[in-house]
Image (cartoon, rainbow, N blue to C red; front, side):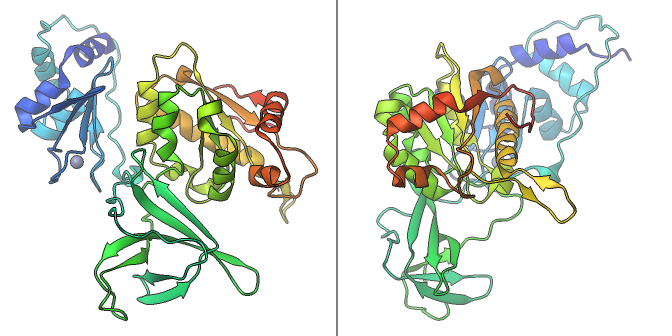
Length: 391
Ligand SMILES: [Zn+2]
């Protein structure tokens, strides 16, 4: 049988009304959104819709439901839902798109390899912490339950970082505690109704959240997105750690500079676990701007480390190359053009103590003008190839 040309496939993918196919085949009732449709996922049971269809040049679907992660185009859908082979799905979709069968050329087309379930990350979708729950505050004792060990701990946090969705709903909280010996430790907590074995009378409690390896994590600072969008902000600044993010967000008033400051949960090693959904959707909704967004990567002033075997690690390079790779991947995953953004990396001052960051800078008296002038004189454009060369 002759192969189906890529051109025919693109034509079918682009012409078919994906939401109509899914509505018809799986009985999903869709509601229109800004950029597509939303409905109950046909692949898993749910009460609130987390299944999205996006009206790009090629319509795609994705489910943000817990543990689901189904996504694809009309061919993926038909193969999965109806058990079709590729050609059968193509012919079926072609009829939906009302395209007459053609004399297929012999162009080589290989269907994409099936998605590897094991590496597919589950989007963040734990329910937000109910409104009305009093959130932990600095200096006030808070009881934290460890469900894995069944132990509880009461201590007063020295820092409280509330991760929120773009709508402002609290998703999880990072608590930082000071040890008596001067060390520090962190707990990621969220809220659960009901008591625990040692305190059965509690109406609810904070419990330590254990991240499954394949579970995505929200970005920190998303609650600023609506304001940033409203003023048509042109910049996104990624820094290392919540403390730095808070200091930078405080200093660089968003309504003045249009800079959305964000960081990820965990170290640079966890940048590949980010749930990009809300940020990418907001980039999508501002893709009509004339200028691409400037995305600034500002690492801590970490020095190059020499390992025992003589090789070196450059933490700054690692930070910028990790973010660059994951941002480009996320743009691709959400069907956005990589030209929607321009990436710049900042070179922090040399000779600083390792770990010196923007929070330290602002503590030293940096003003927003110092920030801007450092950015203008010490940042370089990164090209779209993933690289880790020194500037
Ligand atoms: Zn689903």
